[in-house]
Each structure stands twice: as structure tokens, then as C-alpha cells.
Length: 567
Image (cartoon, rainbow, N blue to C red):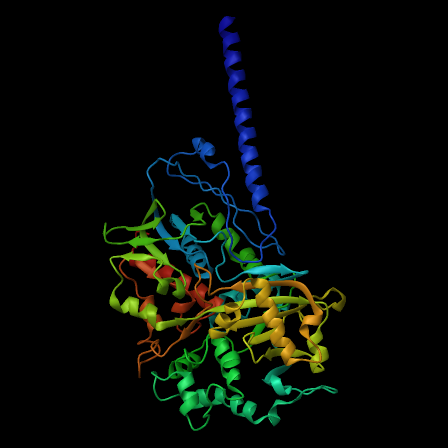
């Protein structure tokens, strides 16, 4: 009897202890979820705090991890809510088959490809920031999902996997041809010269075809495509200043057009673009020439890719996603059979490493390679361009630009550092009563530097952009219609992006070289022992695009498997 009584008492104590531990665990989890449920700041990257970690580790064997990911819904900015548990004083080396550095489009594509090969590869994804997606970042402004990073979509041409997957999920109606309507150019705002490529009835603007400087500018596209520049050591700026067909220079009335639109499309300015190499890159472009925009106001680019790919990838049993984990070194010298990747005081040991960090990050030397990368690899990194750039997105109370121009507007090229602006939402919502009136401005290269040089905060940057638009349309000032709601995303300033996207410099393709062979992008595709590189910057025919990044992630993953059949 006493035995049974003692036994019941012991069992009762165990039950009580379990209940108390469960309550404690629940409180910690609630604290975590409460924190992660805070409203989203305007920047695509921000800091997290950590709650209740040490006490939970008693439930977990040493060297293991437990992650918890929220299901994402359209209209909610994607974020990984993750509990990564490590015993503070335990050994800090964790082993896996493959480490992927970066959880952007290329890194997640590499993981997805490794999973699809179906051999149970243990994959660790190390992401420096507190979110996945990289330079794909959707936010909500008003009632509309807007893109603070990649925005353009392409058709099925060139084996574009994004188009196929997105239309399979959402239908082809999610896409419409982008940037239709009149292009409007500020030519000389001091004299009130603003022209339009389409003159609507009652428009106060004159036809750009009647402007000699604009007409000269309009010929540049045909010129560099039909008659490639003679030497790859010539920049577009030098070509513009010396070629008989142009003879334009800084300070000329139409000079800003070449920087703000022509070079702006490539995320830089004319003094950085390699003239011949730009032509070669354009010749081999494999994606559709027609650009599409997502017209579903409730679904951002980030939301769509999360739904079709990312959520499933990071939820896979064999994937360990570790956010807020900037890699500081990659050591392939200590052990020839493994690569050691360092994050703080934690070391990850893998058979192979796929590095998907941006060219800007690689050029900055944030990651130390041991031993140093071969000269041809480090030169390839240095010879691919990546420049400053930011996006400014603003919501207005009305579509003032249609009043200012007399009709639909495709884009506006300003004379100042706002550079290239376009209305986002005239196709996003068919019901005009529900439509947000949003303008996106893309400032790149020196323009981005100029925009923030005199600004103390995002509000000042928005004020400078509005001032630029006001000068372009003095009779219909943008400032008068601004709602006060806007975002600024400075990709060049962020430590773990260091730029917008890659572009060809004078050194990207060797002088007289074959664009598919003597190309820095091609060199960077080559494995360095057990280290591989992938990203939009390594794609030969679709660089500076999301499909290019996705395809490069697949290529690197397949290369890993081909290098070692044991995987």
C-alpha cells in the first residue's frame, strides 16, 4: 500500500513538473510570437531580439536545432520566425552535407534543387539578415503590395522557371504588360521644358520628337545595338563624348537622360558601364524582351515565390535555416575533405559550400576565404559591376500625373537625382474606388549618392524626390497630393547587399573576348575546390534578374551533386 501511495505521489510530481515545464515553454513561445508579430518597419532589414533561449535547450540534444516558421499570407511581409537553440558552452561545430551562404533567390533555389534530387542531403542555409528573399522584398503601402526590390517579370522565353510556376499557381491573369502609356521627360526644368512621347488632347506638354536633344538621345539604343562599340575598354560615357553620332558631354542639356534612363536600366551611370560589353550582354539576353508586371494588388513578388517555392523549401526536414548569421570566413584549407564556415563562434562543417552573397558583398571582403581565392576568381569578382541604388515608393491622394500630362503615364525621367519614376498601381486594381495612387522612383549610382548626401533620414529623401517631381510639373506639384505614406529602401547602404544588381564594366568581358567564354561571370561559375558561387551576377544570359538567380542556384546545386556522387 505504501509502495502504491509513493508511486502515485511520484507520478503526480512528474505530471506537475511536466505541466509547469509546458507552461514555461508556452510562455516563451508566446513571447517569441508576440515579438515577431510587431508591425513591420519600413526597411526590408531590421534587428531581432532573442527571448528565453537558454532554458529551452534542456529539451534538445547537443548540436541540434529546432526552427519554427510562420506560414506567410499575401499581404503580410514575409519573415522567418525561428528558434535556433545552441547550448552556450557546448562544442560549436555543426556538420552537414552542404552549406548555402545566403537565403535569397539563388540560395533558396539551390536548396530546393538539392531537396528535389531526393537523397536526403543535410542542408544548412546561413542568412545574414533576419528574413529570406534577399533583394526580393514586398511591403504593403495603403492596401497594395509594393516591391522594394525586384519588380519586373518576364515571359516563358529562355526557360524562365518563375513565369511557369507563378502562372500555374495564380493563372496568367496575374500578369499584364508593364510600362504602357506616355514616357515623360524633364528636358530643362528651369525653362519649363517637359516633353511627352505621346501627346494627349489638352496636354500641356510638347512632343519629345520636336526636341533636338531628346531626338539625339533616342538614337543611342539603336546605335549601340546595330554598331557595337569598337573597344571593350571604352565606357558608355567616353563613347558619348567622342563618337560623331553623339558628341554629348556632362553639362549638356540632355545629359541627364543618358544617366537617369539609359544607364539607370542597368543600375548604374554611364561612366561605369562598359560600352562594348553592354552590347555583348544585350545580344545574348535570353529572357523575353517584353516586361510584365504583377497586377494583383494583394500579392507581392515575395509572397508569390514564398507560396510556390520558399515555404516548402525551408520547411523540409533536411533543411536548417539559420537567420541573422553573417558568415565571416570560409576555410577550405584546414581539411581537404571538408569546408569550414564560420559564423560568430559557431563553425559549420560541410562537404561543399554554395556562396550566393551579392557581388557587392564579395567585393567588400566581408567574407574571408582561407586560402585566398585564386587570382582568376578574385579578378572575376572585381570585374563585375555593382553600384549604389535605392527605391523610393510614395502613395498619393490622387493620380496627379495624369492631370499633369493629360493621360496614362509609363514613366517619368526627371532632371535631378529622383531619376526614373513610374506609376505602379494604375493596373493593380480595376476598381478605381479601391485603387491606391502610388509612384515608384529608382535612383542609382551617383544619383543615389546625391539623394542621400543631404538627407538625414528617409523623410528627407522623399522630400528631395518630391521636389524633383515638382520641378518637372510646376503647375501640378506632386507635393500637394502626397499622402505622407512612403518607403525608402537603400540597397547600396545595406551591409549585406552593397548594391542593386550586377552590370557589365569595361573588364567584365575581355577585350575581343567571346561573351560566353572570356567572361568574368563564366569564370565565377567555375568551382574553387569545394566552394561554388551562384547568383544573378553569374548568369551569362539573364543577369540582373530573378529568373537568372533562380537558374544559377539550380546550376550550382547540380554542380555539387556532379562533383561528388556520394551526395
